[in-house]
Length: 536
Image (cartoon, rainbow, N blue to C red; front, side, top):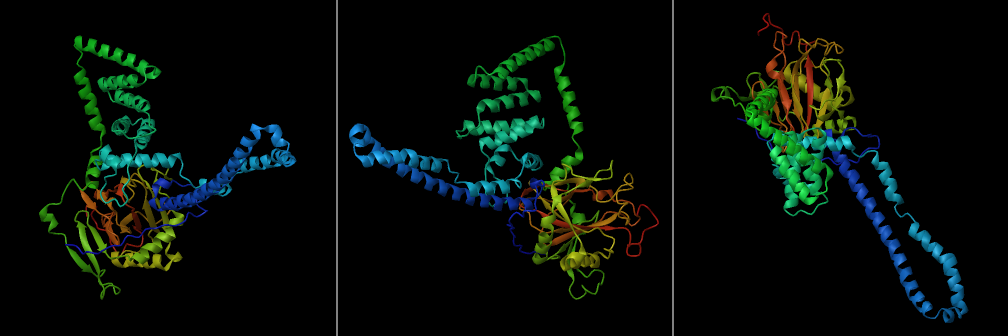
């Protein structure tokens, strides 16, 4: 049973503030929206430049047409033409003055406005790291949601509003980025897609020779020698003098000959392949597989018997005066660990205020490095975040009070409200919110103990992907704008609940905004008393 609400999607379109330096654009859709306005501004400048250049060319064209007629007449009878003193004077004038003016006009830079605009805006442009990060995000989405290259290339994704597609050149670029990361699996997939689109007749600047060069080597690196030879032969048909391909072909033939000799001598190469495959299987973490399945909405499902124990209710915060007459909607998402969702718990106006406060401060999200104890960026957390204090806005203060009223926990020792916006393929791989026993100093500087509980607001709907999943127990919690979920990270005894290990799935389509409050142990001694047994 659930409560329904129609959500409206709020699109942000803010001009890029001059104070923004480059800060990992690909990690936040919120900051990437600023680039749309920047590019629009540049297009306006470019169109102005084109108009100015067209005007200049029109003047030059008229001058050329006039001189063309004049010189045609003059060259037929030069002496007779110059016999007229006016013509002689005008020739001197043209060559001494007017041609110089024409030269200045031709050389005049009509792009001052456009170039200056480009110079100013360029410092805010994405860099190579952003392009590579966005490319890796596409590969991550491909793996997590089991998307084939053709589906991704054609833009056939669920919930898309603005369908787009990848050209053969785009596919080639993705393959090259995978290649530089020694990711030969994705190199093969995207080089083959680029080749397929060219074979289907797509007009592109991408060169089949270059594609086949990358593709054959990537295939060889994965152990498919026969296919690598076939691709190299195709390359040599297009470019018989290709030096590297000719060298590779000789090497492949040499390896093939050695394998045949080994087979004749009784070497069991098949056993070797099976052993290598087994090693790869062991390397693949079961948690990763569960995590990806849950992100797709697959995996462990709750039994009907357990499902019947989940309810939705009106909740008054254990008779909190603020909610006795106006209780909030609450529903159970999972039983162990107990995860509850509060509905209609944050308004659209409050969401917009929180986003506006956070957006100028968004910076690459960090994680605790267990070795150094310091905050650092990590590839497994792709988002941007900002921290908001209650004293800086009545809205944030009101939100903090709401969390305290409904959880019964003291928020004075909690961390500030963290606002996060996920970028292209934005995710946060499986992690714990609380500090384990091998991390005794994780929150030492705060002096408020461990993170006892987590409150998570969903501040946007997500068209596809973006679930919060708990791989240990098989729970998937999907974003719904205006709702919040809450769970305890610690048992009443103070021991960590390892079943709360969770992850934020990559955003496949859409824009994901969340905010969370981490509540700590200090101040909860009488609000949530500890138990005598560590098992409770």
